[in-house]
Length: 403
Ligand SMILES: NC(=O)c1ccc[n+]([C@@H]2O[C@H](COP(=O)([O-])OP(=O)(O)OC[C@H]3O[C@@H](n4cnc5c(N)ncnc54)[C@H](OP(=O)(O)O)[C@@H]3O)[C@@H](O)[C@H]2O)c1
Image: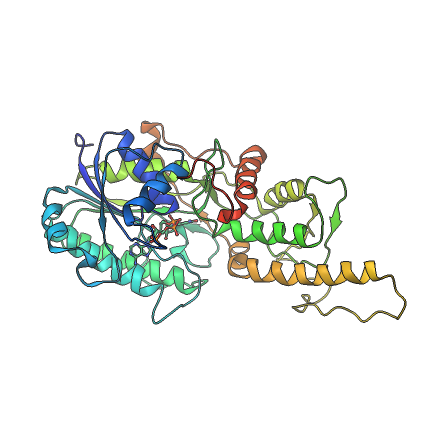
């Protein structure tokens, strides 16, 4: 099934998934060429090596990095780089614009749809090499019931333009498959840091809600290590408490994508890299509450609410003169914190309700014999994930092991 040490072209290696996949491919002895961008005064190669360090690998390992950009003609590759790709015999396309809103002229469509089109063309020009596409489980949109490991040709009700762009990209991959290119699609659910050490490269998705809670704690002057609990009854966190919230750790996704990406042309199909037994939203709230020492209000989206949702941003109620300034200051800070909570969490709130159950039979049949299984998303795992996020200031502070 797996050819010996294939040469793999990988996109997205400065990202969470791509960086983890790169580490796995190098461990497996593959030759890897990364297509990546330089930025912020650092070359593409420096950025990929820094990402490798972030995922806990030796940044000095042997691999190549070509300067490229999914939104540019010929992927921004020089004629020399294009010639040197001739020996590539697998493509793993992990790069994407993970932005939930339309930005600029036409993002995330330009990167996610246009970029996938260019990568498929490249795979064809390399002789029709197997193409592994990293998509998202949420191409199924907002729907109840079981989401199958299959292409949906009718557009579902998307939560945001990002999902729509990833769905359109899948259609391109599917069409290329029908035209003879060996293709397989990996669909992770919401990715959190590594199971063992919580290591993460980016802090979008799930982390937005954690950042929001963290910002509240800091702004309200509440140290999460302190003894007092802060009661934030007006937060209005949405979601059905007994509904699943599908989280998977980055190491599982990285291992699965790398192994599928190495496989030969006989392996096709769609694979849900999702958790077969995810925690419920109630369990997630409990873990977050325990970590941040907050009392999160228990709102069940499926039950009628006792009162309409809190308007935002919340105005600070005028107080009679003479009230203790300390109390007024605390109220102001809470109002400010509440605004921050909304700003950070708004994009991910739709993922807290109407979450489907993902069929994982195809992925399990392929990956379990290789001993690749999702780690349990229990309190300990979540604690490691949150501790790493806090330690690195959600990517803004010093990076342990970074170069
Ligand atoms: N994170 C999740 O929870 C999650 C869940 C399900 C599916 N996915 C999918 O997993 C894949 C990887 O996501 P991730 O979490 O690793 O995201 P990420 O950390 O934001 O990484 C995205 C990667 O794509 C690259 N990229 C974006 N635009 C590019 C362009 N125009 N040209 C070249 N490279 C470009 C980025 O490069 P720069 O560093 O230069 O921007 C980065 O390496 C994506 O396909 C995403 O849709 C992610």
